[in-house]
Image 1: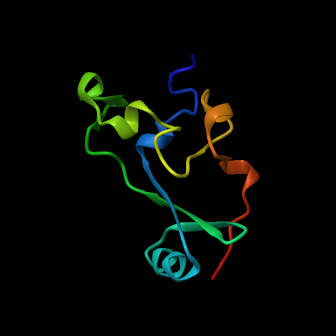
Image 2: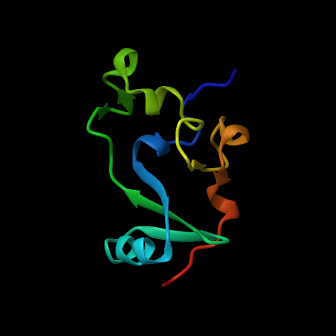
Length: 103
C-alpha cells in the first residue's frame, strides 16, 4: 500500500482544506479566496490553510494524527491531490485534471 512520502513537494494535503458543496456554498467560499471546480452538480472547493501540526515539513502528531489524516484520501467525501501525489490512484480527483470555475 502506498503512503505519503512528500513527493508532491510540500505536504500538499496538509496545507489545503478540501470539500464539496452546492453552488450557493461555492459562491461564499470563492469570496473567501477558495478555488472552486465543478463536476456536474458538485462544486469542489480548495482553500489554503496549513495544518497547525505541520512543522518543518513534518507532522508533529503523526503517531496520534486524526482518522481523517490516517485514511486520506479515502476518509473524505471528496479528495483532491496533485499528480505528484503517490496516492493519486486512490483519490477522487487529480488537481491538474480539474478546471477552475468563476461564479
